[in-house]
Image 1 (cartoon, rainbow, N blue to C red):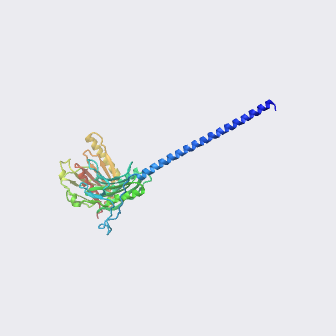
Image 2: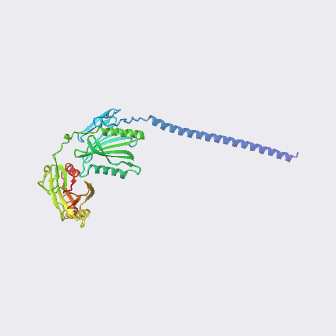
Image 3: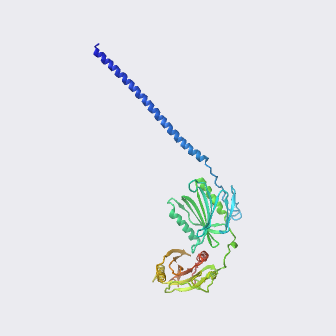
Length: 413
């Protein structure tokens, strides 16, 4: 063989050898890479498993007191021979002489009382095991008074407040009648508004009571929380009526034509007419005032009642109110020298439309106009006007509230 051919063969053999060595090196690098990838995936999986295990152990070992489990059954004496509910925990009795109520509550719950000036008087029974936000229940008892709202209207206003602020998925029950202790009450429920609510209202001792049940938690716990608040509601006891201490005996005022009547604490009719803007057929009916708070003819607690009849072919109830408002504003500007800051609210009293005008009078009077049933065989519409002066605040508000709660229109023959 020629020398050049030998050289070429040798070179070819060397090239093949180098290729084999390089291929072997590439295979080893691939094996090392796959080992690293497998190790990385193993470490990631192990990390995820450790995180999951941590949260599982944390949830299982978290300290949570068992919810109150009670059997909600009316008492044997009050509810047809059924047994009193059985409580599986230690319960205590809470009494409040200012609110004039007592009730039972679980020992595990906390009590918060609020009794500050210009704030609704209340007590909260709180059981909360949540770390962020409520997980448990709140049972709230509060008491307040209104000027003219009745029990049904108070419940409607509260329900309306939830309907405005709760999400679209919230479920609302109807307002229904119930009884708390021995007193008629109104109640409704709100579900899926962050927390769940059951709201109850009672009118007693010239005061409105709100018993609010609030509960939140997982499905099973939430039901137990609700049952605990039901047990507290069931245990509510009002103080005897004799302990409420009415200031004076009640009497019923009946108008001379027997068009209307209402109940009020016995007030005097000897003094103190509160004026209203004059109108075509305005007729003064009666003055009622409290002798105990009388200072002078401008400072006292009292009500003056007027009656107006209007021809529906000439004007309407709403137009009459507008005329009264404009007249009152003019008088205010003449006396005070500036325009008043006024408030107006449309309400219902004994199924009749009514308006409250506040801030219109330069004397500080409040005016309430009520559309009466038709007078004089339907030829005229009636308007009942209450002019109110209040210098003592909450006490006389109770008197006015009683008047409108008991106001009835009659159809004299």
